[in-house]
Length: 394
Ligand SMILES: Cc1ncc(COP(=O)(O)O)c(C=O)c1O
Image (cartoon, rainbow, N blue to C red):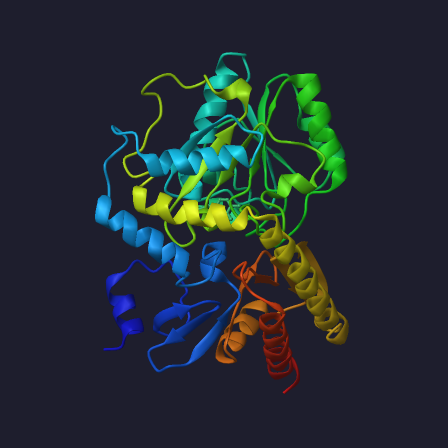
């Protein structure tokens, strides 16, 4: 039986998989068992930030394997301390909590917001339509998309839903009961929609007027993906806390939340914790990612090549204007909205040797590893053109 048939036999039917068995990854490519190679413009959904088999990550992991694989958070661990120090040096935040995943970072922040709000008589959280913050029940409660939430009620109470990029609606939703606003600077799963400056202005006013927290979900936008270390660096407000994960571990499961000075004493001893969060192997990979991505030359390169990707996608948008709507995004987080059939295009692109996926309504999503160069973008451009011709004009 082939492996896709075995997958059907052994696993819950929740994933739509690509029709291939990948043997290994190398740089910006995945190679299947038959030796076919695929240009990876998805990077494990924004996880393999330094591509596949990066020599510095491998060396760091090998060193850590010789020391220990897991100690538990009963022990302070130098690799965790190094990682947290680096994250805090790169940001205006004061303390970190390490997790295994994005959704756990959001859950931790929901708990922190709940306790902070309870002490001030605030019990409402604002979240935007089209957001995605994860699939555990707390994160799902602020993931305002029917396709993810339906069938899973009851969710958390007191979540106030606001339409995306509607400043007046946000103004109306804010009150002295608002404990926090959770937002993605650019929606990921929701289809690569950037939050408008008007919204940031209302958030800033709301924070001053009602004393609420602004919580940025940088799980997809963060760790260099848009050309700055965190996307909030492009925005007019600095959040009170951020959730980060995905690219942070460079392929290992690692997340974190970082909080501002005011929030460092919200949790008391024992009020939050995790068995695996901050696993030393994950931190060993994450520390290398931080060392490399925080280099200004590296970020400049992401910004420069991100502009080139944007230009090539805009060219495609113009050339295929009868089937495209618009290009959106920043750096290496780009979306190309089609009028129809994005899922079909994604599968045909795979056949052409280009890995991308879809997000929101009919939007193709491009999340290449941050190490790619112009030549990779040119290759993706040609493969995408071939794909669109095949799907729409043959
Ligand atoms: C913006 C955002 N937040 C949260 C999550 C959840 O992260 P994880 O899948 O690691 O739990 C994701 C995952 O796609 C995401 O894109």
